[in-house]
Image (cartoon, rainbow, N blue to C red; front, side, top):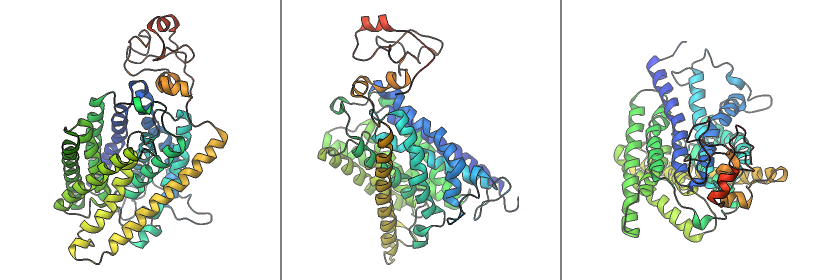
Length: 442
């Protein structure tokens, strides 16, 4: 193919793998933050996006994002047609590589939403929601910003997905959580596996190498700058977060350290290729302050049960990154003596992303509620979703789970109506256990 660069293609293929790996990392990060009776369900809500969003992106998502819009248009790349022997415009990689790279962004954007509604939303309802959400929220924003749409033409800059990925998912998560209602056991919900949180946060940090570095679309100086600023912002945000914890709470925590790192990674995403390394230090530190005080403020207000602070990390973090990019951008930033128009344009683009994501999410929710139940039953919510929804438990054989079977000691399956629960006695559990290879969904 004319214009193809093997080195750039190899880097972009590696970036695809790194960004895809972020979704299992998110699953571990989220999984460690919930009750042990909900770990499997929480992790599955991230993992299922890898299947559902891939098929959605193949059929309509990519074509609607990057093809022209209009009557009879938008179907050129349905099923990844016309990409096999084509170098994607303005890049040196095959069209298929570009499509897969963009697909990995859509996968994790949909998965992020789950963090606000875990421990109470039906798995089937969530699965249907993210398919519709990708097409109705993610795809239009992607087109308007990266596909030559009006936000890009306006002059707003989004290097790697501050608005497309993080503002859209964070805002949608917050809107969905507010409409779904709070958890019945909210006061008793505590993280059950801190090593999972550390592992997941570390995988996310690693994967962000491809998330931001790959958004340069080549193995060049822009890529090197994006990787450097990504690491620096994450480090600055981590240190800022645990410092605030030490001052306000008396001790730095592992959850705070990893939340800070993720906040910094989100903050730098809109401007990773546009700021200097020292600018990234400011973006990470200031952005972390915005995120941590947003999380604390929302918890104090107690208006919405955003289970795992999705909006504070991703919505506020993406918005802060867009605004900070208007200051620290080396070409058009305010602190470099420019007129501030980039700040205004970034603010307008980010604000539109918030309003659009929230409004369309509300419409999707109300339409879905007309035809299906969105929440698990109160009994299932209190006892834990894992056994009822997936007929599995996270930690294998114990007083509340069954004997080892063909699925292995650490993956127990039961008939949902006979499965022991956290509220049953050991004796009752022993009497009712009956392994099976089938499971019905909640």
